[in-house]
Every structure is written in C-alpha cells, then in structure tokens.
Image 1 (cartoon, rainbow, N blue to C red):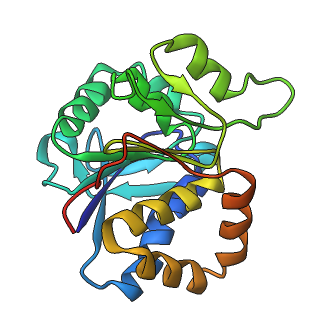
Image 2: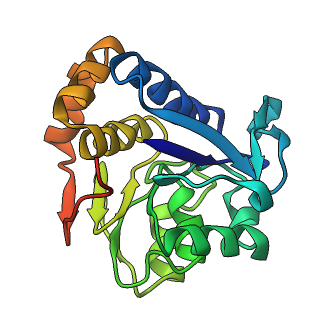
Length: 215
C-alpha cells in the first residue's frame, strides 16, 4: 500500500509529523506499507518557520499511489491558488483515494475534490485569524462543512486541525489495513487514550461510506 504525501512551502511541521511520523510507526506493524513525499519539484520544501524537508518526487515524475494525503499549514492559501498543484490533485483524485489533514482540506476544495461532499478542517486559531472551517464554508458553498475529528465521504477523508491529523491518519490506516493495525499503531504511538477521547468528543462522520482502496 503506497501513500503519497503532498508537501509545499509553508506546510506546518506538525503535519509532516502527523503523516510521515504516523506512517513510520505503522510500518513497524505493517511492513508492506510504504510512503513518499511529493511537491511541485523534487527536492527541498521549506516548512512554516523554516524547517526543511525533502520531497522524493515532483508532479511530473510522481509514481502511482494508493492514496494521496494532502498536508496543511500556513502555505495552504498559496497552494490552493496554484494551478499546477490543483491540477495534480485533481488528476490523482480522479482515480485514487485522497485524504487531507488540517488545512489540506482547503487545497482539496480548491481542486474541486470536495464539491458535493461533507468535510471538516481546522477550527482553532489565534485571535487575529479567521478559522479555516469558516473560510471553507464561505468560499465553497457546495461543501457541507462540519466540525469534528474526521469525515469520510466516499473515497475522500478530511480531518480536523493540527494534532487531529494523527486521528485522520489512524482512520485511514484502519480503512486500508484494518482496525488491528490502526489500534496497534495508536498503542506504540502512546496515543490510544487521546484517540479514544477525541472520538468520544468529536465522533468521526462517515458519509457515503465505501472502502478507500482494495486492501
């Protein structure tokens, strides 16, 4: 099972951790799982506040994947307005399961992937910012926006903000590899209590449920 993780300048470092980090731990449980980073061009991506990570592939040379995961962060606004990025997301989503964590949902919405679907995104911000969940509602009226931890609408998964990206990834792992793999991954992450608490307070919503991909 191959995960492609979309990166861009201004991605939030915790979103890098919530994707690569969770998958790295999951691979200890399910060694057949693999993942790689994707950006407009292969090479260095500058995260919010300066951390540098390396994308394995550019859009033009990206290999096939079983699911595309779109990260979030302050750079989402530029990525959601970039024709090349939106075209790539649109092309992959046409035949592949997709997921977003945090404000990665804004990029999916910009590409039209969330049209007619139910979705969620980041809620909590500092006093001078507008919550992305409100921006999603205002800019994309065809999207039914709800405030919860994880939403699955068909083969599209969106998650809430920041640390809820971990919940989003665990949900995807459960869908693609089974609940046992997801639960064991949560255990070795020492996240099972937080995951249970989040699911109780912000229950995941499954709309038009169908398998994300063949296991």
